[in-house]
Image 1 (tube, rainbow, N blue to C red):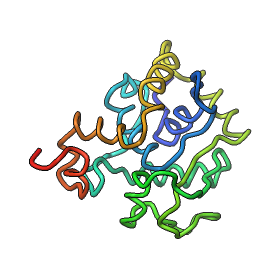
Image 2 (tube, rainbow, N blue to C red):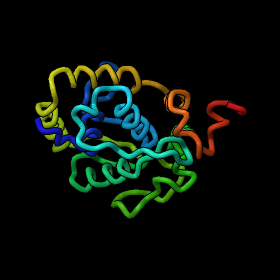
Image 3 (tube, helix red, strand yellow):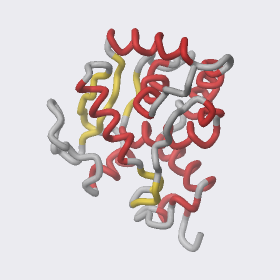
Image 4 (tube, helix red, strand yellow):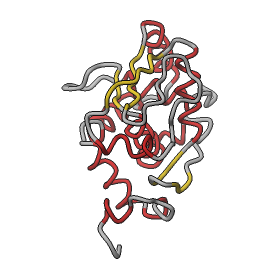
Length: 186
């Protein structure tokens, strides 16, 4: 295989992994996507097949990776994903948007409205790429991705963030919402 799977590929794999009860090929919200990539790196064997890590750092809303934002912009430009902007159904998903993280960086079709969320969907071309990627993964990786998505893909966003904050407190040192998520004096 040669470990040629990069962060943008990991995003395609997360989007395309099918599990019962989930809309195939979709992830709603950049915050959710970012936290899923963070957990993928830490709670699966993905380090054995990823050729790079996302370079997460503590930031205003916990673990943050500029590479994830760059990857979704690149995937959209390559027409592998649709990156839509829609009204955010949950204020939790607009924390980063409200504070100016992840706002439109000039991508076509993106809104500067901080009360909108970015949702991601594989295109037909993206599905073909997903299928090609799965053939490059080591034995058992697809099943592990399915288990990972079953475990974390259905959590309400606030609960997903709380899980990340509780397990990886070293990434909350700069968080402006730490007390709101974990409670004061934690």
